Length: 507
Image (cartoon, rainbow, N blue to C red; front, side, top):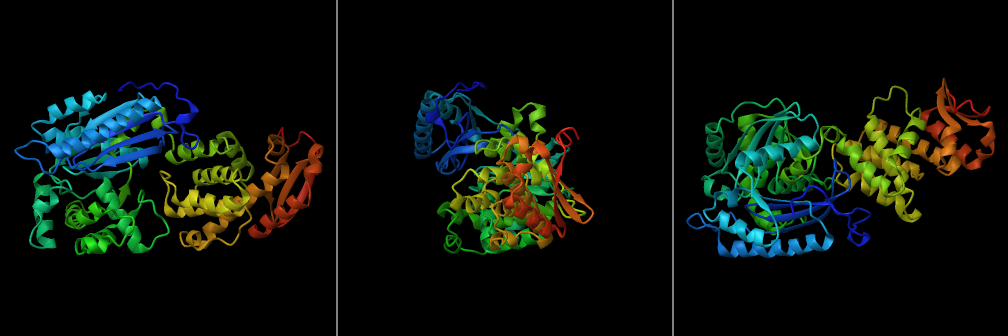
């Protein structure tokens, strides 16, 4: 199960239009996990994600893995091997990290894993650090700063910049080991951890953010969103200024597991270990002095996938790659979205300097939402924009996509959860995008001919819709109303013009 090619699987192996094509099995110190991926290679869709809390890194005696932990891990691995065989997936990468790497009987354990039909390999500390950093570079193109990947048995620190991985180190500061390093107080713990970082040569200020990777950090991000009462739920991409991160570190360190369990999105095991992360985060912030921290859900597993891509695919925009695949399965191919985005390009306020990539992504989702039952499409489309894991997008940009979807459905009073995420003038621009999509869509029923034989443009104080004479019958009361609504939103006067055939196609 190590080949890079995949064989065809039938439709019974599909998830929401995707076929699971590749799998990563991550044998960590705290959990053992299998993730099945499909969709775009550049922005893979998670189709199955299951973990077993085997805790291979805890309970070790005389350097050997605890029998009960081994049996838990193997039980999960046997189950997953059967699932992989049933789905016909042979593109499987099985990797083991700190606990197996350090255990005296790690080789014996891997022999038992091979008996399950898998082909495991041990990642060295340096390899683990590098691959995790590659995952961050895949999620945040052009990232400059450092990655702190926290597992159960180790903390990997990596410098990144210019698309490359620089200096890296693996330290025995995993979440399962933090209790042993705790001091008599928060500040004492910070001093102890800071000394380890200093002795490892990690005391220089960063030129950019500190990217936090790993399940424990993600749990911390979930708690930060809970404390903010944020309308967003995905911890990926959460950004905190250094002062806010320090405040979070101290606050979480002072909370009890019982208090943390009031957050319904935190598991009991995360609630137990989360207070220990406070001193570690504070020590990292003290030593590295990043301007901000960024939480990344992409790490080792995604780094393994990203590393295998050819350079031209690595260079793709992860947001557009993910949205294009998602929308294509829901009736909006990328070519259609690009053409509609071109048709609506003038439907923006003067001086707009927003992101064209976000407008294109919003156009894709708005058109895809129209394939849904009418009474569900706006709410579900907004959920797509706000809550689905898109890579390479901010909370404000999510709100712009949601506003576009709502306006395309003629809902111009935005829900509170959308309006709270972006400035009014930026949301207003997104509403215009959505109204322009609505105008085109209702003009010709999404026909390619209507794209070629019509043109929207701004001329002085007017918003002009030109339609070629051969399709003048397409002009009716619904699109006259749509044009008037869009023009009023832009502060312009609407005008319909019928022009000779071929004028627009040949322009």
